[in-house]
Amino acid sequence: MAQVEFRDVTRSYPGGVTALDGLNLTVADGEFLILVGPSGCGKSTALRLLAGLDKPTSGEIRIGGQVVDGLAPGERDIAMVFQNYALYPHMTVYRNLAYGLKQRRTPRAEIERRVRETAELLQIGELLDRKPGQLSGGQRQRVAMGRALVRRPQAFLLDEPLSNLDAKLRNQVRGDLKRLHREVPVTSIYVTHDQVEAMTLGDRLCVMAGGEVQQIGSTDDVYHRPANTFVAAFMGSPPMNLMPAAVRAGILHIGDTALTAAACPDGPVTVGVRPEHLQVRGSGTGDGVLPARVDFVEPLGSHVLVTALVDVDGTPTRVIAQAPAGTEFESGARIGLVLPPERTYFFDAETGDAQVHRERITL
Image (tube, rainbow, N blue to C red; front, side, top):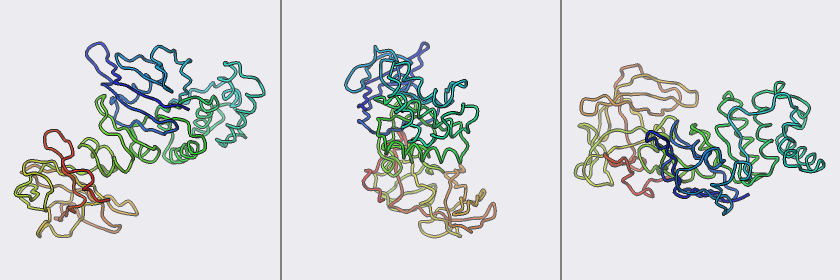
């Protein structure tokens, strides 16, 4: 195990395309860090640079304190799990697990011991004599993880390893990964665009967009104290509602409606509130109530999602509210929305940066 460091790492391509722009990131020894963001944000580029499959344009990468920029992938002592499993179809599970150790001329007895231990850890001991074509998707992904883990690398890199699995298997293998890291705390960097995976798996999240880091922190920090509107809208399902607004004389106004006291300077703002905090009223009138019109309703068993339209200076703005199970509204019905002051976020209207000090958001 080892600490991993990116020091001002940039990767540019011909034509002026910058995939990664000045990445500074330290992954502690034994930490499970998630790189999360939309396609093209630079997360996979960072992983490829760390693995040695690409070279940085500038900056340096360290593993265990050693600069590895000039080392070939095989000299970096890292292991990688890919989206498509990358197993040898003609080999048994045992031989797939043992292959990397044989290439390193590991003694036969040591190979046997490590393969058996890893298979037991991943609960695939009864599959050792089978070939990949005889396995389910979840079993193949466990074998792929085992082939990387059996080497006992300094760092474990996972590039969207669950994206080929169906929803049930993703949940199962996600649990396997959490258990595995608890039992074998190898320094791990996990790349995903799925914010549910990101929030449930890692010790810390690194949210990226446009080749740059937007925020680094725990799930709690990123979800409850987003650094800007991108993080607020990206992390969460459904995402945070964001609406143009203004603060006048210390009072928040959305369109012509005065709502609540605002703990930020007067002027234009972007106001945010998560669906689970937005309260739905059956009437669109009253002090501090934002009028809205129901677009459609989605019953989800434990709760109902109400998608409504709010008129903001003549422009319909879509918002989503989470209501109790059994809530029913006809399309077009007039309702009211209440933004709890302690759960309302304020962002700079131009930069998108959070305006209110993060500790003011009550958890």
